[in-house]
Image 1 (cartoon, rainbow, N blue to C red):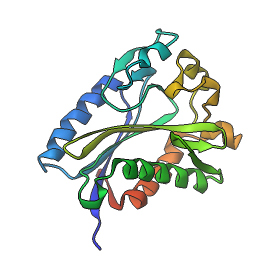
Image 2: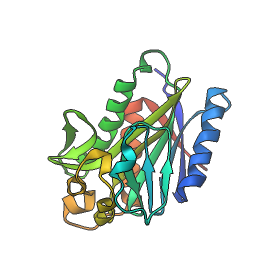
Image 3: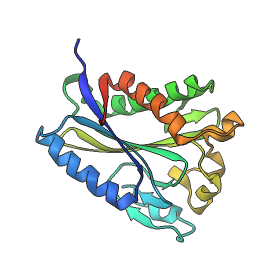
Image 4: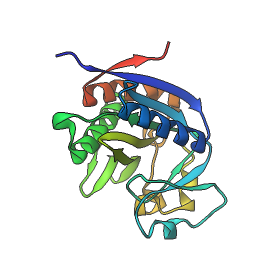
Length: 213
């Protein structure tokens, strides 16, 4: 079976607001079938984002970082250097139109990344994301419009975990958060992890990854 193409757009380090506007533009173009499915990889400078949960604002304790309210599901999360953020702009069709199933596929891709690094990535019942035992290493929050996805996941690679103390991430104590680097006990970079995550997403989403030329 021929797989749909998935265009990878690696932006390096970009401000959250700039990439948010890009997401919305790509979303409209994907709805109109003007572009293929697209995957954005990016690192953001320090920022806190707030999802649709009504009481999410109470989980911000330190407002020294920018705070952005957005339409994704979930609570409060932190983005910053050393964290790989992925925004899949996908048109879900046929049997793909199952948002719980889509979330599980994102988790599968992240778990396969941990496995490739020799780490026991898995799920924590009742919580979305990817976990290493009792520690959370990746968060997921999505939005969908006319069955096209946007927003996505944040994988802590070599993130400064102290930054999570500014919030109650996803409604959890900050000490629950960890990174691949902390789990491995050795340095690792975002660039090392990108191809592993890309391969995991290609397999989990059944898309043929195409890199920008």
